[in-house]
Amino acid sequence: MKINVTAVIAIMATLMFCALFASTAQAVIPAVNAPVWNQGDSWAMGKSVDLDAEFSNQLNQIQHMLENMTNATSLDEFQVQAMASSWLKVEVVTANAEEYVLHGKLAARFNADVAISVTGEMPAVGTKAWTDFNYPKTPRTISADISLDMAFVSEMTIVFEKPTMAIKSIETMNKASAIASVNIMNIPEIKLNLSGISYSYKNIDFDINFDMELNVGASFSPALNLIKFPLSVGDNWTISSLASITGNVSGFLDVKGLSASDKESLFSNSMLQNAGITDFPIDFSKLSTENEPKIVNGTFLMAPRYVNASMECTGVELVTLPIFGEVAVYEISANGGSEKFYYSDDVHFLTGAESSLEGIEMPVELGGVQMPEAMISMEPVTAQEAEQNINSISAYQSDLSGQAGNSNGDGLTGLLSNVAIVGLIVVIVALAAVVAVVIVKSKKK
Image 1 (cartoon, rainbow, N blue to C red):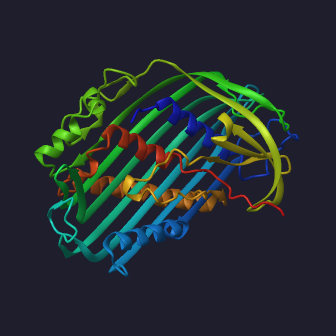
Image 2 (cartoon, rainbow, N blue to C red):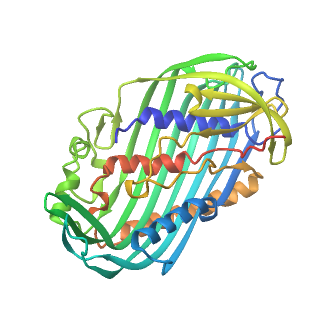
Image 3 (tube, rainbow, N blue to C red):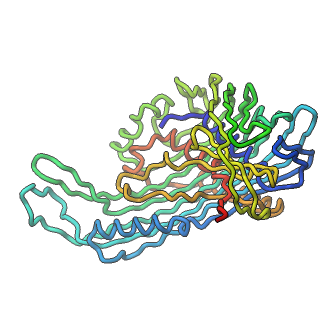
């Protein structure tokens, strides 16, 4: 997995920009023009989502696949519980003739518990000849017990160019902690060879303890013009800003109990070797890389790089938003629609943003499971509600951080053999930071 820190920063900037406009009508906004903010103006958004209900169709597909794979009429157990929540509060701390300065805090939490068990007639361990049509089967139970707890907290300062609302710079202080435990029994392994088909079964049992602090700053020249004001349908414009990125990382990722062969397979990855990672625990403060992104002892020494995008205001539609009711919004597409923003002339604010899931691929074994179109959303809430939830998640993240530092894992087998740990680190942080700021749209018939 190639790490694109610039892309992560650009996405965070995009979502923060959208969130800042999403939930208030207090500031004075000239129609279709850039908003006007005053010191003390604040915005708040948030939502909790029951993911096992949101992804019920995908879970049903997985259940049927397991039944078909084991020739079982029903599963012994199929319990999946998952919850995600994200909350944001921002406030204008400076408003002068040249710029606005905003301070914001974003907190996200994810918890999942999975217990699945199915018993069926499975091929016996051994090799089945190509001409053998009576190869024996034996009863076997496939089971999975998985738990994941993760929390992410980010404090950020964003400087906007007042006349255009383009982003001049972003400073973020991020904390992420996660504890995962996975125990899967009797995973089928099938190998084809000249003599026939070889059947075997493996077990994996591992714990991961992760704790990281990531401080990142980015300045843009010229300022990042995500929205071009005044705005009307058919407008086209181009983003082309040189991003200068600074930052540092500390913390650790610890996985215990790897076999010698698993370690050899995992740490032979070229990205890990480039980062100087040869064993667990990984100390991020000692992380160094030879190539871009250049990191020396946890400090970013990256060359400036361009952030480019093609933007277009593609149309208008009627949507229903919390608090505001039914309003007309302008749809703004980036790079042909891979990213979208929604700006309401009635509300005089951006009302949301969304990012395509097309790049997310399910594991090969779950290739028949289709990702849903719906995405996690945040909605306008009171500042008090957002602040209470942010404080709660911050305390939870601190607790997870202590647990991760004191945990003793039982080890990781083959599950991570195809995952670049450095990429995993970025994914954990990016997924938490980029919990989609999407207002669920309801088209008027």
